[in-house]
Image 1 (cartoon, helix red, strand yellow):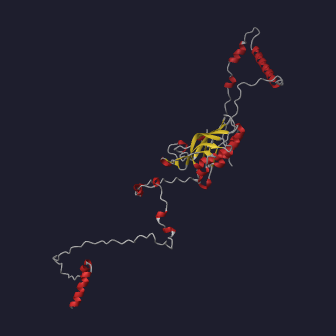
Image 2 (cartoon, one colour):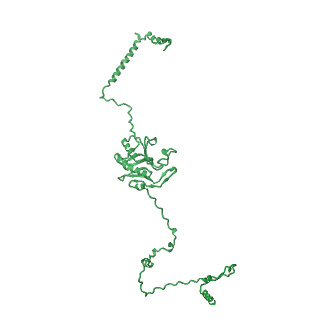
Image 3 (cartoon, helix red, strand yellow):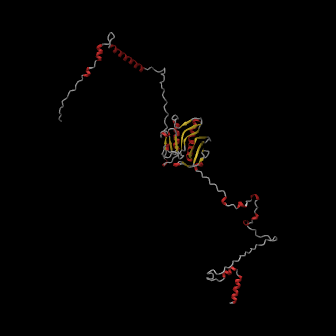
Length: 372
């Protein structure tokens, strides 16, 4: 027993204080009332980690070279002092970095197709007005570029949707430019009567929103030629064939065409728009009227010298002369030989007609009973 106790004592002395405290016997009632004295904590001793000795200079070279991926950083060339990043900037947090710029909005297919070789039409911001006015993908149509690089100015510039601007440009380039080439050296400008305007149809208060309010309509009044002349599309003095050619071209391209004859709002211009209806329904109302007749002269033209004589007029003059002679003879017959009027004839003439006063009285007829 003494030997076992001595052995345990020796093992407890060799163990660390923390392990000895863990192995010491304890009872549940030892610290019931806090009477057990607290054990002082001993300072933790830190032992230095031994480092390997430096490789002696006379040691042979290593037989296996290290991999290139684990090469020491000392083999890389050190950047110059001017390019070294100061430690303050290296330790700067990532939150202070400049935020990335937002990506540019992607252009529509119409905007990509409407290049500067077709029309001068810069994009403008979207418009969102009251009552549904405005639209998206808007452009300001300033000029139309022809195939020979000449520009047809739109006066004033029209604010339209991209699809409407592309349709107007294609109409001028394909149909109007060849037509105007034979008139006066080609077309030079397009008279824009109205484009985008937030209003109801025909400017009537409370009416349905017009396509002008959606930037989907254009009113054309005239075409300007290179020789300085202007052709009004609603002028009846313009040749009928020219106006009919323009009528067929616009009705084939636009879903709505309104001109003279549609209503009295469109008597001096042509309305064009690209409204979408069910079953691709189209409206083309433009009456191409004939030219007005010339005003007749106030006086008739002089009778030419080589004209035949007027026989009918001569006979009528002779009959008038005979009638006047007969009237004069009757008047002379009513006068006496001394030139005085006949008293008896005048008295008879002035006397009332008695035969007119004595009218026969109607006779009474007896009613007869007729039996059938």
